[in-house]
Image (cartoon, rainbow, N blue to C red; front, top):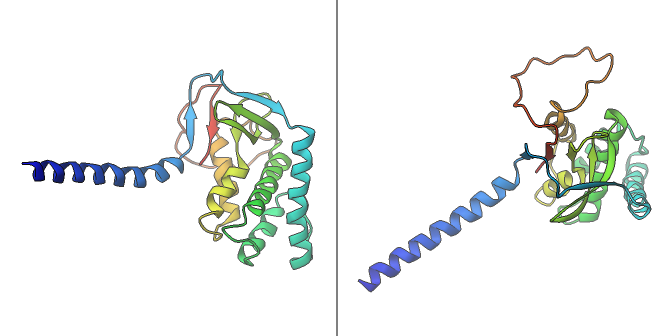
Length: 201
């Protein structure tokens, strides 16, 4: 009887452990959205210290571009190509966390330059992080996390696809740019509350 009980307990423990190991990374990879106003979240302007940190990170990517490809950062959509060349040329490893963050800063700058979004300091119960948000809203993306969570697993990624992933997540809440003529046919997205905060990945 004791052996049967011990075997059952061992089976249940292994089953729960397996589910935890499998489900946790999968759940972490999905976008988290809330339709309720989140009073525990505050958005503040990026501080002087954060701006200096961002400048250092931009310099890392700029230096990689100049030294290896003769190309500098342009703070435009063209920087997607530079980041792709850096990844394809294996100029960053899965262990190079600081360069992962530098690529995240550049990715955020592209959203700011091309979409008119803004950098903000995002604070909640979990701490603080840097986000790009649609002005005068709480709709945000976290480009540093978008890059670090991918690159710590593999450096083989399609930067254009990552950039588009962020646009797709914000598509149904972002204002349409003037003179936009390329309307995509797609299923109607789920409705979200005005105070939705999109936390990707």
